[in-house]
Amino acid sequence: MGAEAMRAATVYRGLLKAVEKHIGKDGGKGHFRDFISQEFRNNSNLSDQEAARRKLKLASDYTYLINSVHHHQELLFSYNIAVDRSDEMRKILKKSAASVGLQLPDVQ
Image (cartoon, one colour):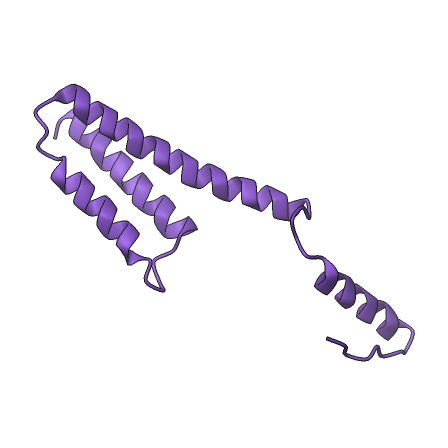
């Protein structure tokens, strides 16, 4: 297996791993994996080495994008940005009330 084939396998595995981890594979999301597999199969016999490198770079960039968007979302949630905190506040208030022997009514 040549260096380019090993690089292609690494990029392929990385992209599939990112899709599985951040997009998922259940609930009809298998078409993402199918598309990736089909694209790699279709381009496995490219004779133009420059075109093959560009396609591998694109796949690598997509992997980076998927991972970065997920990481950005985690940061937003960790800093409580773009999160509806009303449920969290209700839980805190219930705990505080319970600590002094009170029970808050459930309101929706």
